[in-house]
Image (cartoon, rainbow, N blue to C red; front, side):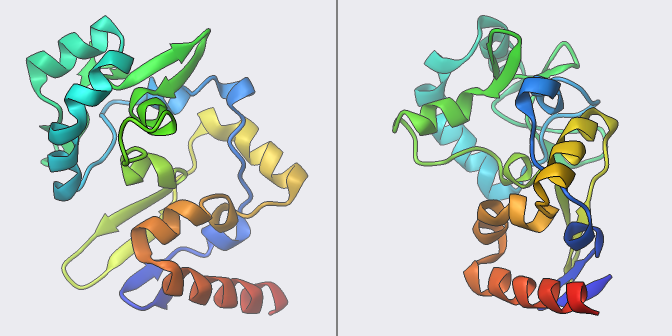
Length: 189
């Protein structure tokens, strides 16, 4: 672990390799698990605001789940998250054949909304846990991502480079430039 500003970072994000391989996993992270995507308070307001624009992109099951549970909810652990369909799929998930995609991201890609998706989804496989004085930035190893780890190793892409855009979105460009310096020093040590 090392500190960068008000973040404590796991060295795994520098050492592990990762590139999403949707053709292999079919977007399993959007349909597996026991909770919705983690959200922060600002994102709950964004979801409320953009839902009418995103709704046409969603499946009827997702719309029903959102209209029954809300655009977001407080999970059993007290954390804010997206609602689920029958305790499985994220309510915002859509399918292209058998591949799960994000309905919010599809609306974003078509210029309908200007918010890509929850930052927790954009950051994956990095998970950020906010504490009073700092944020913990960790690599989340999940067996459904084994193909992404293999592809990352083949292409030699460390986790922090794979999620560069999302890390900049979450922590800012200056923070990311410092992370790159730390990564280079770590590599050469």
